[in-house]
Image (cartoon, rainbow, N blue to C red; front, side, top):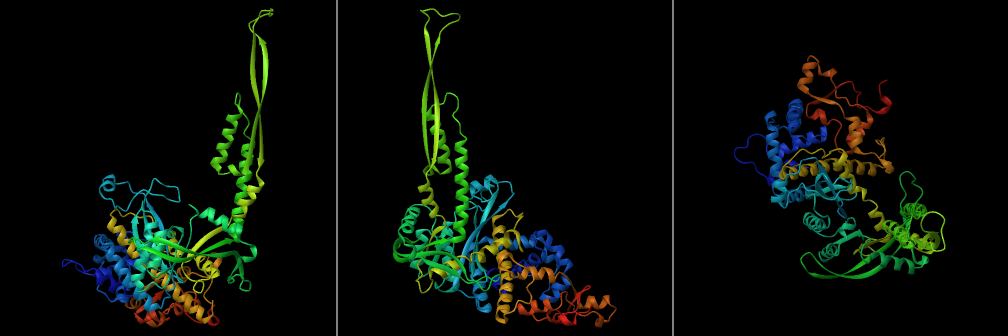
Length: 574
């Protein structure tokens, strides 16, 4: 990957810096990060001391334990995060190198954002003085507005989900303005705009689509159900004959390889759009608005919709008139519940009241002819609730429908292919998961300075590249050989192994330097042979990721422990 070379090409240590270069120290930290799933700065030094013979043998660098102190590592992170533009330039250079070396496809790119919360006490002075402070209060899906956070944007390439670009922004930053800079950076990385940029509904802002169209690019994203979109969608679905809709059929899954999947139906409307780019240039372009209903999504929405209607119906039926409450008050109370639930159109509420007048003589004792009479009137309130079945049925038919927009032609991206592409959004979400709770977790994060946070996120991007490239290489090798020999761990519904799970199971072993091993066995290396647990499966794994099985002996390293030889399955010892 030439990580060291790309980092050293952009950052040069000052003249008083001794020992490993920035690039070499970054590589050592990345090894520690992936190996230990730990990014504490203070933990690197003892880890290097423990694995120093192995690191010296593999890298050939003059590594000292003093090179891995938390002060030096903190300085490295500060340098990497001091200038975001310089970090982006480094990522672009490294990305071009990875595309060339690993022959990565560049037809489809994706972008998504996520947030990372910290439990730091808010620095009110920094919040007030620095408008661009990273740690900010902002919207979160986990309902924790009391935690400071920062956001991370990630751009990946299909089909391997290899991340190329990463941007760290303040926690109160909106997602919409991030897509245009990400697309421009990716165009600069690839050297062309001939790729499909896939993102969620926040990327469907008119300015974003106009900028991509003006730059000669193509995009695919769903429209948010806001503004005029719901009314336009209802009109199109209502007026479109069923016979004119196209059935969307996707290839079969690995669990059922013989049955193609019918996932929904839809149709396409060609529209002429007009908008302004980020630079204020007016653009006119053609767009295909794909109106699609997902069968599974519609069924889930219908189930939830019916449950909400039943719940609200039962709630308003239990609302009995209170004492001395008039019809208008009862009706207002019921309508407030319907408005809060968004179901005013689904129920007809009729409230009427019947007056009941009672006459009573005033005073005590037996009344006389002259005793005044007091009349009191009470009201008996009757509430009738009727479901508006036509309105319920009309809205029920609209469930599951969405609008996707693209400026790609039908020959480039058909309706069926567009839905297949968008359904692969897990390729960008999975690296996000690895950063959240996966192979290289960011949290908990103890760094305080913005520059260090940006710097460590640059290294987290490279760590993700290492893992995804290894898995991409393994998957591509197995696909070429039409083999699933090393598969043993199922990942959700995809029924395919993750390289990380395989590595965790097969290579949790200790490595010793050859000289150290020779001392342990009394000078007889013949009895200290390279051995790998899980035998042929491990050999298949090494071959799949283009590492020869004798890689470790090449560097004078031997596996230590009670493990079996790397031999064919039929020849395993009992």
